[in-house]
Amino acid sequence: MPYIETNQGIHLFYEKIGKGRPIVFLHPPLMGHVAFRYQKALADRAQLIFYDQRGHGQSGYQASASLGQVIPDHEHDLSELILKLQLEKPILVGYSSGGLIALTYALRHTGNIGGILLAGGFPCIASVLLRLEYQLGISLMKTGNQRLLSRLIAKANKNTAEDERVMDDYAQKADPGAVLDLYCAGPKTDVTPQLAQLDQLPMQILYGSLDVYLKKHKKYFEPLAHTEIITVDRAFHQLPTHHYKVFNHLIMRFLRQLD
Image (tube, rainbow, N blue to C red; front, side):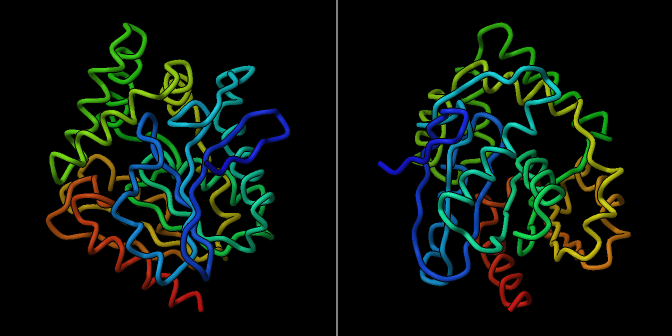
């Protein structure tokens, strides 16, 4: 199985398939790289890199020194992955809070990023319902209910019974401390003041038309000159699975625009 070792000694599991422009996928807490199982169909058109963030799936874990260091540590892991795989100007695709890591990387590595595509992404938590979702995750993890949270997330993202089984099983592999770290760090992370630095970076921000509490965050991206905001009709938050055909089409459309 392929791994890279970061300079902090963490082994990160990754899967690399296809050839062409590199696309790195960033998953939300608990899910691991299987969140993007429907994106593997794009391997005949681009080089796809799926990885498990620290403490998730088959990757190792090392706790951060503080909550404020959690997202920067995840960004550092991503940077190490990109460096060691020798990826030039990769496209970062972030699902939900995976977008926070993508944005943090872009702010620190403006010279080695080709663009960002976010599905239900946000630079901060500016919605009461989103904050409540984080609080639910924190509560379930603190009370030892990772199994329940895994099942809830798997059910919310599944298309088929097989999807649910794979996602549930994989989510339960995650280190509880790693998951809790991300849930606790999310509400304390806000890159909104720095977003103007990404004015020239090509970005595509996707929201489901029915994803009311997340699409409120589009206002933070609207002033950026090279950012396109797209609303997917009759969709909620789970774009990579429930609306994978549209999602995959938009990824390839974004790549064509960059070329």
